[in-house]
Amino acid sequence: MTTQSAAEMLGCSRPFLIRILEEGKIPFTKVGRHRRIKVEDVIQYKKQMKADQKTRLIEIMKGDEASGLYDS
Image (cartoon, rainbow, N blue to C red):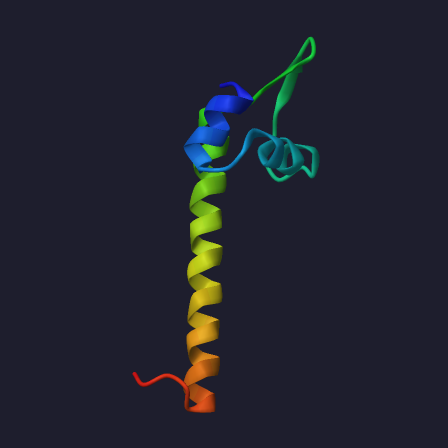
């Protein structure tokens, strides 16, 4: 898949996606000057990103509960 379609799937800008690729967070191959990404890798990254967000949100909620800022 192209970087543009992968960025649309992830809901981010293409330059941000390029940064993610260059950091090695999603594997890709180069065909000439163009980057190509496997759909499976984009889906896997999206699942991992959502799981990380959920974990961080739970940690924030626990901290707020401990501080008395959040009623459960």
